[in-house]
Image 1 (cartoon, rainbow, N blue to C red):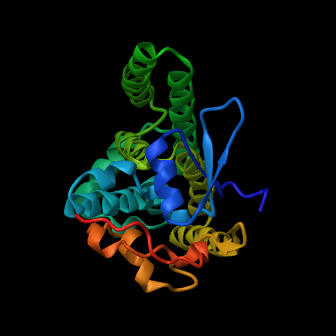
Image 2 (image 1 turned 180 degrees about the vertical axis):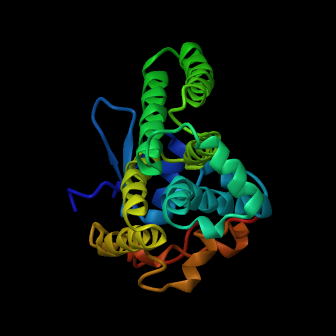
Length: 269
């Protein structure tokens, strides 16, 4: 689907990643005059797998992979949850925290949804500015700029302390996603979820998540389902999706590739 925000080809500049995709039964497309190669068919879950997972013990690789899925949920929902709760669902907040939140929002003239969108846009501007500048200057701009702008916004009454924490947590969680293309897609989707949460509260948050799942279910990559092995259900492929199983259990290629040779090269842990 050309109009989807989600990447349907995996890009890499690492030879070891390209070789691993070939051994899994996927194809590699080399791009002329570019260090980047394309891998297909791609699955949504591939973008949360890091090459480093396979260079360390399987238990640690599994823990880090599960952490990335947790980061995915946080970066999509954390700021939207703040907007939903502070706009419609105060009863969900403990009394002590509610008192603190009321004090922090006392001088803020904007509704929570405008406040959240403003801070999210500022974070994205800082991120893009840091990416376009030389590495050392870019890191300084990102850290110092975030601290200065956040503190100044709170003192000026443009935002609350709690929102700064929520936006910063969402931004940090987005950095955990290994693929920049997927991270950028998730960051764009986050704006839509925040708007839905500002209109309908928790129901809007649920609607936003449901729309994301429906959209993912309709995507394909070279004719294969984008969310395989979840739909269609292929539980035997889960051993290299949600976890990183020992190499002794990864001898068969994923069913998504539809290859006649189902066995990878023999390997041992």
